[in-house]
Length: 428
Ligand code: IMP
Image 1 (cartoon, helix red, strand yellow):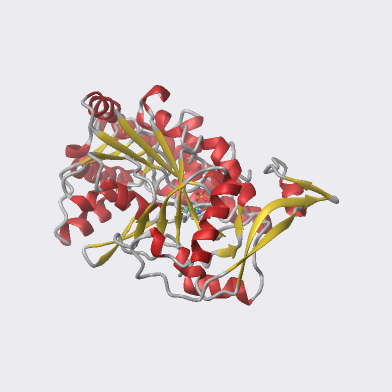
Image 2 (cartoon, helix red, strand yellow):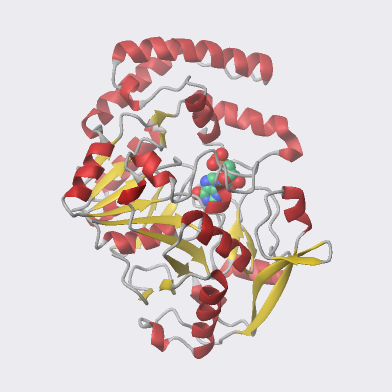
């Protein structure tokens, strides 16, 4: 049995797409288990850059089974666009399978997402406005429409009628929105989507469990990051799903005894999009420098990301919540050329140093980072292919991270390409 769950150990955008793509080379199957097209994975492969939002990046390898589990919320318009774009670039999508238990995003979810954000004003979450939260809300309140119902014309007709009646009222009366949706038009459109997607629908739980029983290698690809988890993140500035490792079981339909290894992906620094407290955020020119060098602009929304120093309090928290076996550190090359680097080792709160990530946002907002300074390196490391060829200070930096997080580092990224990945430990 060889199963690996790969998760984001920070606030998302850690470079999971690239690490998944690297590990997918060895895997037989790649599975998405939560989130939706709020995720954006950039993968550089075959000399080209691919931006994927829903389809597991393993699709670029051709021979891998790629599954979208029940825990994902699917916008069929986006999924079809992605399928068309891959096919037009000569990449087969024949190995994709979608769970009939996954919930479907409708245009009213996006309108509600936007209306809610607008109503919150300066207390907004800063969502991606892709309808993710409202789709999960419908799932929890048992008003959602799943892929299974999408595939059944009669059921869809009935469920969509009920849903639209409620959502049009909600938009007009609660949010004062002028947006109203036409039932016939939407039904026709979603019937078309259903016809195009029907061939991809299959029982993901059966496929995953069978693959594991056969001894195949399965990679579970998390989206977003630990601090955006609905339970364990910086609530309410979180997403509406569970990006943590435990959710792989729930979101794909397998038991916890089937997971062998958990890898947490973290940048050599840290970023965040959207609102909410961020202790090591850099508000100065250094923050701008990291944003420019690291191309820290959202794949999904294009928003500039907030940048800061590596936070070992968060790394330790992610290690505990996810039971990390390894860390994969990405974008180490972005830090080249800085004289001194800082790693946050703890937070100063009301005169005392705390070492654990607090639950209260008010507390987090008042936390001052306690830093350990380490010397940087001048060399361009993007051409390095073996860990031992990194400058001594770069290796020392990685070792400090290992020591402070209490987790061994298995992979180090020195650039966006698949070959710019230094292997310290084999994961599969
Ligand atoms: P939502 O997932 O669109 O509801 O957005 C909720 C929060 O999660 C916002 O702060 C978003 O910026 C953040 N978020 C959602 N998806 C991602 C992602 O893939 N990377 C980073 N942040 C994300």
